[in-house]
Image 1 (cartoon, rainbow, N blue to C red):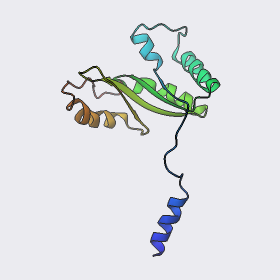
Image 2 (image 1 turned 120 degrees about the horizontal axis):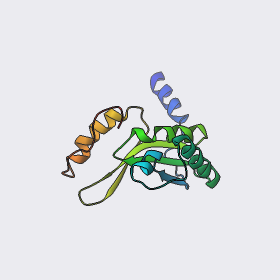
Image 3 (image 1 turned 45 degrees about the vertical axis):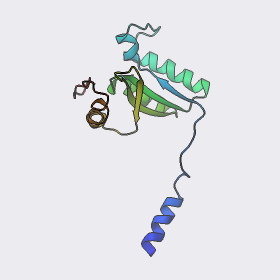
Image 4 (image 1 turned 90 degrees about the horizontal axis):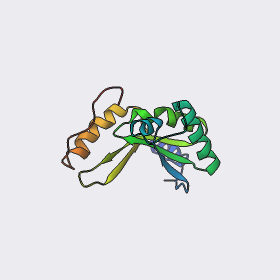
Length: 139
């Protein structure tokens, strides 16, 4: 009985369920703009990240998802810069299904390689396309 009481007390100290954030935003990392020739006024990733985070803080954004097409690691510096300024930042990636639907995958974990491996089985088999991921440290 004491064990159950301890678990209940621990549960009561936790936040009361899900939280809704009015200001959430999806952000592409610097590498996305360079790779897709989207154009940016910033020449370095650090300058870009600083400007983006400044704008997000100024606008009152509380939560961001940093996603590039089929790449997880390209947004890690931007997510870290956002967290350092007090924002909640989810790393992730964006994928496109064979029907053209864009899917944003966000996670809070620290092991993107394993997430991508598991999603290869869960998503890309279901949408009947070849997995675009290589399991290396650069993607």
